[in-house]
Picture 1: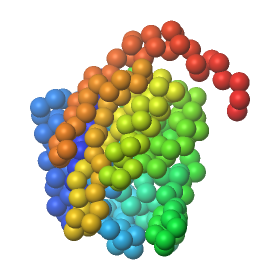
Picture 2: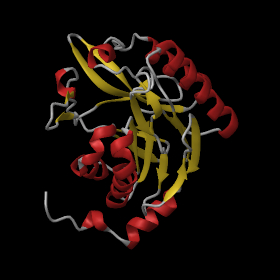
Picture 3: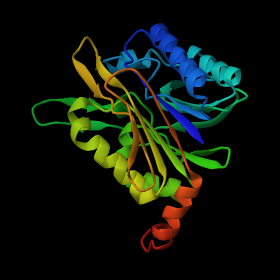
Picture 4: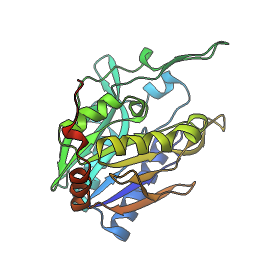
Length: 268
């Protein structure tokens, strides 16, 4: 299976962001012909304050990002793992991944489970749970002979979710993210490679890059494709664009045969 991972520098202008996303999806299809395309977290809009981010929300299946990605998947006959967007469900909001199959139909929906709630001594306070609802379902879907598992950004720090995805047969795990520059430089690659190693899956870590919020905030980028041994087989530069890689199910099976850790769990 061939995959393309799109790295973006999303900002507040939703229309402009969607135009960029559509252009990069089309370029990836025309130049590389992937089976699966992945976008980053909050690819449609990245607004500095939680209330502003809420205002970008969509009720599904209405909404510009939903219709755009469904149409692109059908037009190009490709599966699109559409990063995440703000889902408006009644009076609640969720950080939600949508996946569209080659016919344009929605084949998976994942609401982010682990929410980033931090109160730092000195007064810095960021409570994602005040404006975003918590997802409850572990989600996988199929692309050809591969089972693909879903996670989003802060989920990365909780290995229990990835164990559950592996137990559900995941061969590939996709993590759209907007990892901050501060934490990303020390933790991003280490945690992504660890999740790939412990689950023995291909791990598609797909990030936002560069500054937003008028330069006050920055994302780490470093979009990566990681193989089941934990080796980085493709990585993006510090700019918008996309990377591609070929996933080899035979190699995945070889890793699992030679080191069958999934058969050796004795706790949980």
